[in-house]
Length: 287
Image (tube, rainbow, N blue to C red; front, side):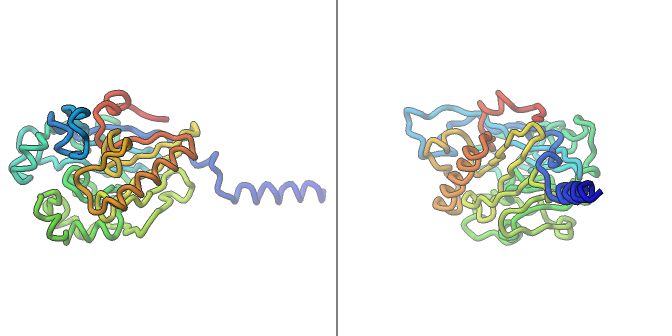
């Protein structure tokens, strides 16, 4: 009887501890809020030498994470108002002319969720990588969600510094009005979203002051490192920094951090705007 009691106590301790076997994301879906381009890659990454330059048409990546404790959306893409050739009604003309967004209304995150069998009301948390126009555009579609963002980034969105205001990359209409009263989980660094190690928000500043990425551990054991604009595309990993950064030093440190996580966990990095990677792996579930 004493032995059975000891076994029972050990089992009780075992089940009280966090278990990676129980920390299972059901699936991750990779989609896009339309595309930007075509344009020469040097317009985004001017450090790419002429002999390596190419024309690109890039995805605006968004992610849906299905976790037992709730549905998560990582980035909400371009505002719905940009759909169907209406860009200049919502963005400054220069961004429309350069980026050439080709977003249809069915590309917007609410329509994407509906296609997958979900509604916006079912989304428990919206993680925003950063407050640029192609990543925070539709947070107003999620008034019931908890919005997960670095505190520094939220402040940059509402009160961007002058040198960041001039380019029109922060579109206040995306997060003003009712969005001011949303439930924001204002982070200062990394955060284990569900407390089980399966979805971890990673602080990756550099592109913006409060940029963040996400690491997902699937039930299969696979680690997905979802970089978003911490790494736009493969050229950034090859040593060519993006052309729009708050701090190049922090940007390079964040890239190195994501690479180390990838290597240590035998994972894979998913870039925010890489046309070849999206063509090979976008529009599907990862499990």
